[in-house]
Length: 231
Ligand SMILES: O=C1O[C@H](COP(=O)(O)O)[C@@H](O)[C@H](O)[C@H]1O
Image (cartoon, rainbow, N blue to C red; front, side, top):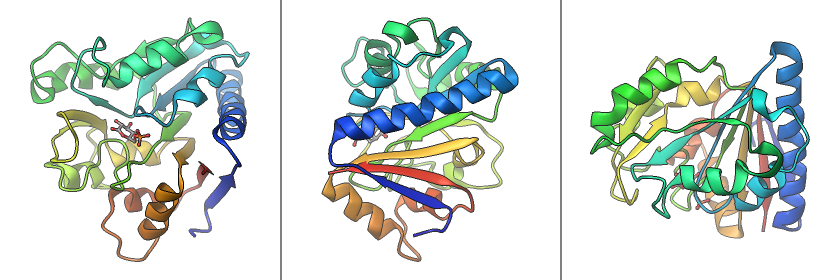
């Protein structure tokens, strides 16, 4: 394992969510104390559900927190596949109801058509992110860096100054929009949240030298990464 990484292993999802939520809340409080505001990007999919519920009950100055997504499926938030829908229904509730949310979806027909508006939105965010929480799919994708993605090399290019890109891939389900790797790697605090023995095995494969799995680009980076895992 990369010496910059810390692996936090838990017996179950509730214990993981409690610990990860406390760590994230601490980083958000630190950001508010230092700069008067905090900026966080979270992942979608199925893994963060319990985390979002716990995090939404953390006591902090939520109106000073801006939340966006690491990546989005190009569907409206009425669609069950929408990552925004997940965040709105589970995270932006309870104590976190007054956090500001910046969605990555527009009503344009495709992410390629909507990318201009999304770029304007995300350029207005005061970066770097204070907190980024990544997930990982069983195919080794993180954010919307999918194996075989049409703009994967652009998204992973360390010298790319573009903040967000459209992405299409055979395994992606629908067209996507994603923050690029350089943005993720500049975050003040970067977490990887995964659950299941299968994903631990994918992670181990990605840690092998020369791995082409997209998550390997994050693992190889010369920066701290906190990995939260449970069976
Ligand atoms: O499609 C996506 O999948 C990944 C992983 O999701 P999970 O359901 O396996 O937890 C997620 O990190 C990403 O944000 C999402 O768009």
